[in-house]
Length: 161
Image (cartoon, rainbow, N blue to C red; front, side, top):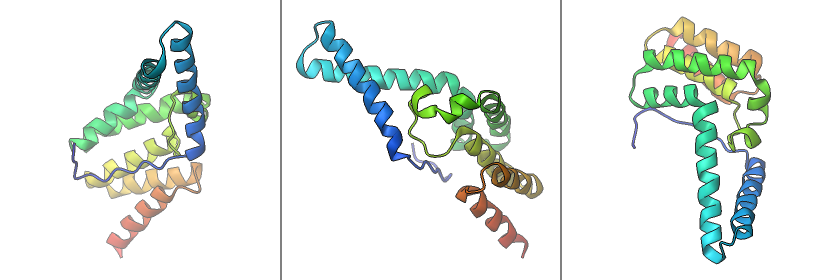
């Protein structure tokens, strides 16, 4: 699906190791129950994909809903989804911190950082620059190295100069 909305998803390459380990475990399981050769590999890969889909769909459901709405350019409706995502991962920081294992996510950016940047982006898209700036600043306070938040703030400042 092509969208006119920019999407950024940097990958933490080291995070692929746990994903590969889970896939190897799934392949081993299928071989242990008697599936052989390419079928075990295919079932192992399918098991990994299904597990990742279920984990991200359940633990990251608000994030996924927000992304779906952003792709439809329903920015105002996406904001509460990203706020719920932020609050969920704020309450359960260990899930976000260990997302490589808990969600089989190789994303470099934490879900909390993504939520704050997405909220700011959505506020910018609906014309509320003050709220956008506040959320980008919050993202930088919590994640000082957030390149996305820095770029968003620079963009907002360039419009006002």
